[in-house]
Image 1 (tube, rainbow, N blue to C red):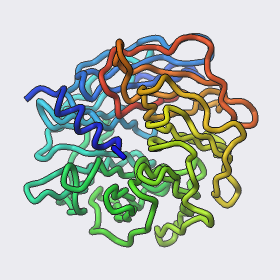
Image 2 (tube, rainbow, N blue to C red):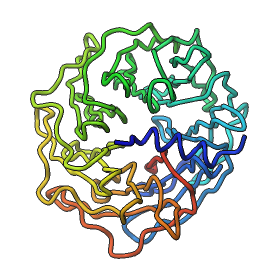
Image 3 (spheres, rainbow, N blue to C red):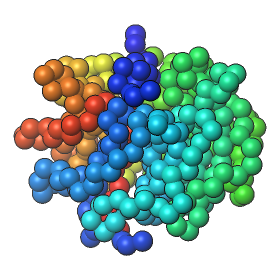
Image 4 (spheres, rainbow, N blue to C red):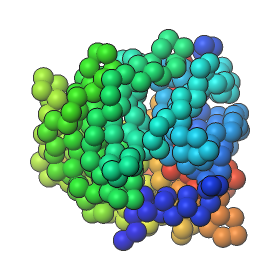
Length: 375
């Protein structure tokens, strides 16, 4: 089965060239990066109408990761060409984006994935492949104005890129003390310590996941971490041990996703529901999260996505838990561009698609998007 990482690589090879407060509480912005379109778009979203474009900024190509700071003030994008870099933006009152002074931060290796710590002090970045074909993990301190600065030396984490499979992805623990990196080709997730000076340790222990783990995500209460497994079409679940940083597999894990190639994970703010977009079956699986972290499929799941070939890649739940937004990876002929789809979340977690047409973005291939809540 062709993985999303392989699809991403193929798309890029074909298409790439050689502090104001946010809006009123309840306002949310969906940012979508075009890996093959050199654009980052921002949309105001909500139950009161179709997404409305509020930001359109040029980046570079190959932007496969978009993340935000814990206080929702800053947004970060990785680009591969014409320069490997971290772009940082301040999010304006209406969702517009302003470059952070002193950025972009130029990198010596192509970026693969990143994340930020919940305490707002650190950014962790995966880069590669290096000359030896491997990937590296590097910690960055984050200044008050949002600018990242590298700290310490990069830590080797194993194969990356074409040599080792699709993009590895990091997530930071709720206490900002540990980083977990999914190993797509190895079917594992490995822990690294994140120190107060933003440096990272060598690899500690690893846990087995399903095949092709992506999108590691902590539950809102910080007790559990989940990862989609593309190769085995399942979701792995682990309980986080804050005293040691260890991950203990939840009984019954991994849980079948009932769709092919699950990718990004979306959790409701109350932690009751978990959703995965299934790229190769063009649908969305919904789970009810049990008190022990186990996952039970929702009645009626999987729920319809877009037409065949649109490949939903990421899903996001609104801060009030009443809406879900899905972002395509691609599009189908005659309009092969990314579209945004909305759903109403019913009290039992079931998804009801919006009656209106999906909103086209004009972007070619999107593997990175982000929902930012207003303050």
